Amino acid sequence: MKDPLGRLVAHDLRGTMPPEAEGVALVLHGGGERGYGPMPWWEGPVVRMRPFARAIERRAGGQLAVVRLKNRYFGWNGIEETPLADARWALDRIHDRYAGLPIALIGHSMGGRVVTHLAGEPGVTTVVALAPWVEDGDPRPGRPGLKVLLMHGVNDGTTDPRRTEALGEVLRGQGADVTWRPVEGDGHSMLRHPLTWHREVAEFVAASLLT
Image (tube, rainbow, N blue to C red; front, side, top):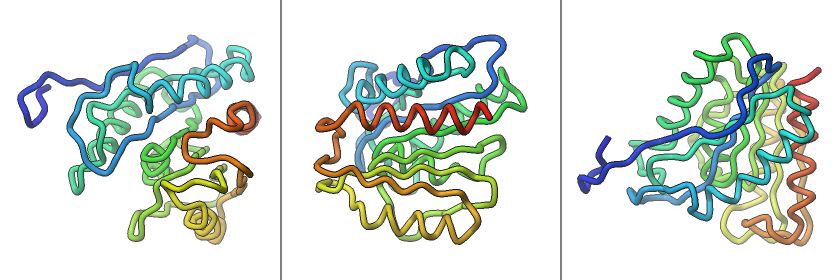
């Protein structure tokens, strides 16, 4: 596939896919408002999510498939919503291999915006949004049975923790089981207390998918 500048770009999945998995965790990276620059695996937003995948793998003890998606582009890109298209492509691959298994979506920043859009997709039972980009007018597909973890650094200057907390109230009002977790002293990059982020996400995902 070629981007608007004629460069070859591709989305991709990496991770562990055991044949006897009991559930699937799909990990989504962040980005920006606009940008058609290709996203290699070594780009910062992509690398930032690798420890989350590893923490989930360790906590689940091989019982979960844990895969990371690399988007084609850096940006959300307006009405094109390119990371949403990439995430839906990834979900199709997951359904092909693990039909009927529960799915957890874990996303940071722009990836957090993606997971809230896709919370109503077939098979999705768990949503983890880390410092999510929350916009007025975005879908809020909360429902009974949906398990949601919202984590946000209190000192985040890129996305607004107050919007994330308000999102949780909306989803809770629709019947979702919402956990709101502000992280004191941390910012958007989740670097001040990384072990807190990794541990709590891994515990939440494993408990949600392996019950």
